[in-house]
Length: 234
Image (cartoon, rainbow, N blue to C red; front, side):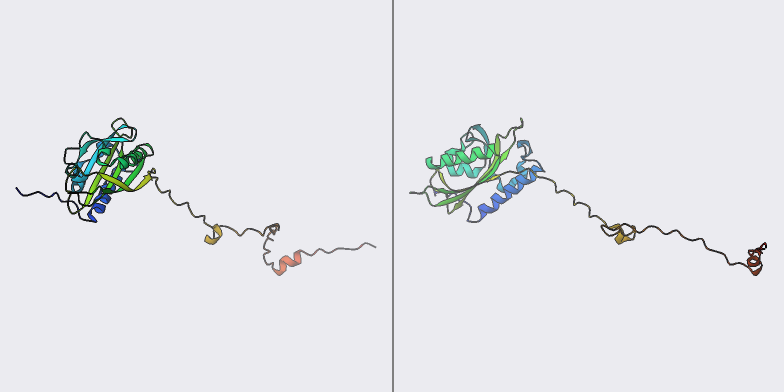
């Protein structure tokens, strides 16, 4: 029988799958801090499904696979459901993966890891990307996580393949806040002709001048009637 080679993603494809998974999780939030496990629909991540998994927090720093795609089974050469996430790492890498897993649940945070597999006879070089995204359980506590692991290389080779942590990025999650409406711009009534100009500072406003009543023109007869003859006594 011919030897069956288990192929893995070519370089660059892992970044796309990780980005799609993160975008899907962000869409599930809908303004919330953390989405719920019940919100996850496999139909929404069809292209990343074989690399995806869900883990449950069973102890500080330890997550156990509840569901896992075929790519993870291929890397380990066995069914990984029920196994701890740390089983996919070297002894040196297990401490680091435990630290970031606990940070994801406790902070909570988004975790992205760059991995490298051990090499040896029948074990060609493999690089991998791992993404961990926290989820709420049905009880409302953050004890679940959606994730994906994508290995990149020529072939998986002899299994199991275990990884070292080369780099880790832990990003605390911030509650989405609606952008406040812009404050109204004050309007100067004088600019609209709706207000009299104010007097200069320190100078009293000029007093209103009484308006003299208009005097109607008089006829010659009316003017003569206004004169009185005054007689001076001796």
